[in-house]
Length: 259
Image 1 (cartoon, helix red, strand yellow):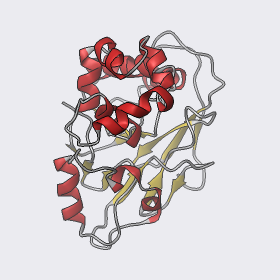
Image 2 (cartoon, helix red, strand yellow; image 1 turned 30 degrees about the vertical axis):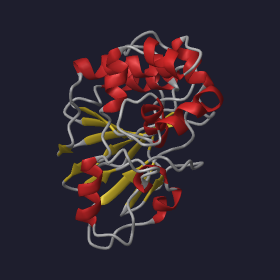
Image 3 (spheres, rainbow, N blue to C red; image 1 turned 45 degrees about the horizontal axis):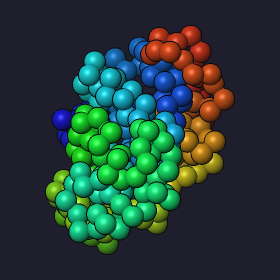
Image 4 (cartoon, one colour; image 1 turned 90 degrees about the vertical axis):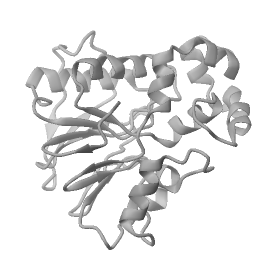
């Protein structure tokens, strides 16, 4: 089970959207420079929906097996797929299952499946467990990590309690789906809110809000951030795929605008 409450220095990585090549290179970088030593690594969600979905999840599971200080957040794409396959309790399973042939064709391809029942049969059990057990929130003494963001008009602790409860019967939980939450902050917390979900040309790093999704899987870079240093790491999609975490192609670390 991924840790839900953490402390100390961190690395947080934005939405992957099944971009296994960029994930390989990020993990190569962390290992080559020892950047993950003594740090908790958090992934902000959206691991699936693409031709590399299966290999992306497998790589993440292999990483966590040797680096247990790793947490995985649930993104809206992940929750949709979990509902479609009946991996979580939801009254909307039929709705999402019916969309799989048109909305999840690349995910089907990655597992060699033709439809939702075939995908459920062919997906390894540890991949099902991974999707079913994704966290909706990770808390830190200075930060809170959530896929889309927090609402501005609801007390912070009430929202955190709902996120911990993971009510998968909701149709579209706003904390995982609502792009408007990229720009909102509850007034009753001084924690920095860190999210992905909303795709930006460049990451946004302010005193109270950090947004890291720069379109990985859609032709953009995979962005990660070292905290508390606010040092950005960007892995462009043009890098060649490496064979292990020990690859010799290393992305460039950037430190822009005080980040």
